[in-house]
Length: 243
Ligand SMILES: [Zn+2]
Ligand SMILES: [Zn+2]
Image 1 (cartoon, protein in one colour):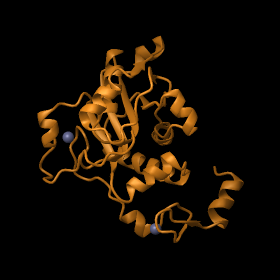
Image 2 (tube, protein in one colour):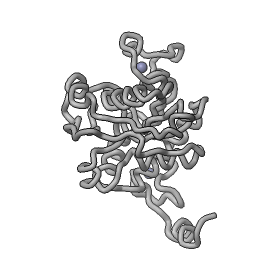
Image 3 (cartoon, helix red, strand yellow):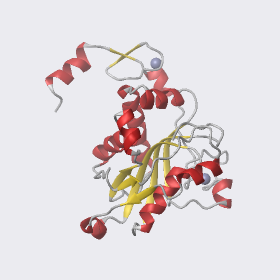
Image 4 (cartoon, helix red, strand yellow):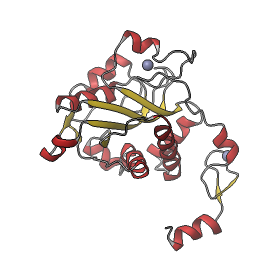
């Protein structure tokens, strides 16, 4: 049940759309802007890249180079206006933008995820970056999705062993070198017994370097199945946000 304060905020204070600024009722985005969000439909089941031919199930990249995880769900194409939403969420701490991205991710997962995971794990930030930013955007997305799908979230299961350079401006090979061996997985003995399938959550999937390393760290601890859940998928490696 909503609190009196939340009910009042929702009903007495009309909100404004975070994209166009017009009144948007009780939501953070107006209906026309919501209808125009670039939601991903037919896509590669391995990396969630939108596919030109709906008859395909895997993109040409995934046919050539296998990804280490089992499947991926991405909600939106990373381009205008989604890039703005991600940047405002990450760097300006816009919780309204984060909430919208989380809702889109939850919807995409609910529509496409056939087998729910045993646990959800956000991609961790290094401690120094966490202290500078004051929050981990992936953890907020993971918590929202976990709450709505009824799946536990374990933010401490993966940690960064060392600080890495921001990925903005690095090509795919440099990203791989930069992130290699950066993560460690710590499962309790109880988690070892029942956690077989983990969904890794991040804000954006670009080259996949970070998510590949996280997947390998989980697999090294015996996790058999890893699903990738991201709010946005870069349509090609050129669009490179900070990871
Ligand atoms: Zn709008
Ligand atoms: Zn693919």
